[in-house]
Length: 68
Image (cartoon, rainbow, N blue to C red; front, side):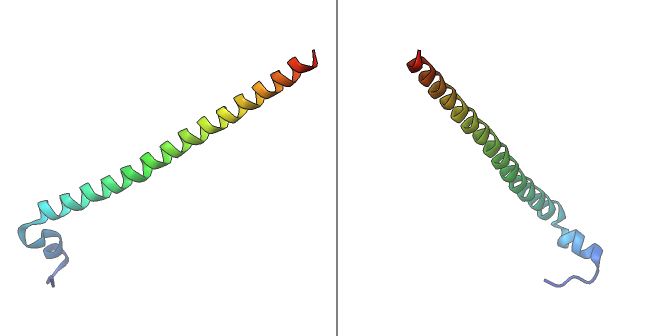
């Protein structure tokens, strides 16, 4: 499709509301997926870190209990 001017491009032949709203929805959805994935990754990393630390504390307590 060839447009004669930039304003004609923005108007999209009278379908601008549909075209630009679909672009906005798509980009928002893509942003949300990336942002949500990042938050989930951080949460899982924190949970794993806490679980490893807890297991180390339990192991240390068991070693200390065995020495008494």
